[in-house]
Each structure stands twice: as structure tokens, then as C-alpha cells.
Amino acid sequence: MNPQAVSQLLEEMENWDKDKRFMAASDLMQEVTNSNQVLDLHLQKRVCQAFLKQLEDQSIDVQGNAVKCLAKIVSKFQEQQIGEVLAKLSQLVLDGKAEVRDIYATCLKGLLAELPASSSALACQNVLPKMLHGITSHPLVEVKEECTDVFHDFLKRFGDNRVMQWSDQENMANSLLNLLKPKQYKSSLRKKVISCIGALSAVLADRQLDSLMRTLLTDVRAASSKAEKQKYIQCIGTVSRNVGF
View 1 (cartoon, one colour):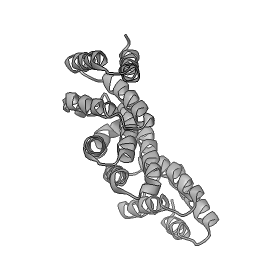
View 2: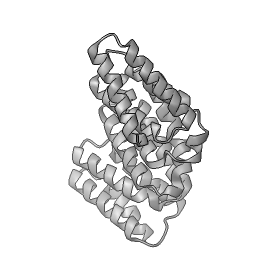
View 3: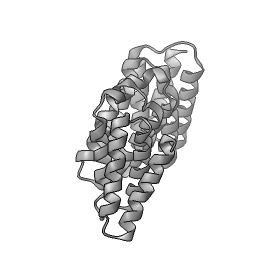
View 4: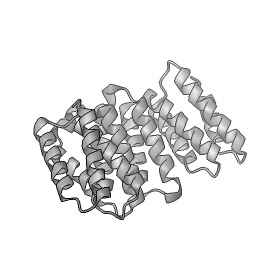
């Protein structure tokens, strides 16, 4: 891999012409993924920063291309840089620009899908705490929804990691259950929460799983309306399918 060629493509990624920005990003992705050589850490940082910047590009095409490219190249980098990108994107999901928050979340989910199993500890360290903070503490429902979506993909990819087994699984389950209760929340959030609870149930210890099911059954009995009762029944069904009942 030619460092000069990489530097030239990095410059073109800031060109005034959106087509040149798009092509430079695609060419740089090909350059990195097809090479057997590893970029030095300084160039790795520059490459990641360039793609992160394109996530906020005025062109939707450039944004979408940056999401795909970043997911493909990060796994080629050193662990330190992978961790920094995961942490940066996770923080942007929480407090980045509202108009491109879904872009950040999509990119983060793409990275989680592309990372090898050996990167599970990095994902747990840099993604899990921020997503749980967004679910439990962030005031904006839109942020809670994106965090729930990312957390679902995280659980599907790295849910069996030891860090997850050592974590306070009961609080994770309760945090998600609390999102089901407010009636003012959008149906799209409730659907993602139910799906996320299903994914979490597949990696819960037996005691936590038993506690989750007991809570859901209690909520069904206490439901004051048909719609509310159906919500909890749907959640019980999703949990049952995920754990193999």
C-alpha cells in the first residue's frame, strides 16, 4: 500500500465535488482492504477521521458510501484504532447531530457486523456502556430508539462474551422493560425494545431469565387495557422463541 496514494485519496475526500469525494472514499476503501500491508497508526487515524467526517457530508450518497466503507476497513486496523472508532460512533449516537443520528447508528451496527469475534472485548468496552446509558438516562426518545437498535445488534453479535456474563444482566433487562411501560412512546420504539429483550433473553443466566419471565407475566396480569396486555404477550412470545421454548 502506497502511503502517498493514501494521502492523495484523503485529500480528494474533501474535494468540493461530491462525486470526487464519493469516488475517493471508495478507492481508499479498496486500497486498504485489498492490501496485505498495514497502515501505520498515524495514517489509520487520518483514514478513520476522514470517513467519520464524511458521515456528516451534505450529500446523502457520500454519507451512505462512508457508512459502507468504514465498516469494511476498520477490521483491518489495530485494536486501539478500532476501539477509538467504536467509542466515537457510540458517543455520536448519544450526542451527535440529530439529523444524522441514524447514520451514526447504521454505521456502528455495520462495524459490529464486520468485526471478528476476537474484537468482542473491544465492543463490550466501547459500545455497551454508552448504549445502556442512552437507554436508561437519555431524555430524548429518538436517542433511546437508536441505542436500543444498536444494543440489539450488539447482543446478536457479541452477547455471549464474558463481559456480558459478568455484567448486571438483571438491570439490563429492567432498563428495557421500563421502556415498554410509558404509553406515550412510539410503537417503533416498543417493537425494537421487544426485539432487544428477545435477543437479551438468549444470553441471560437461568436466574435472570426466570426473573424476566415472572416480571412479564405479572405485567400481563396487571395490564389495564387490551393493547397493553397484547404488548406484554408479544414480548413473552419473542422471549420464548429466542430461548427455544
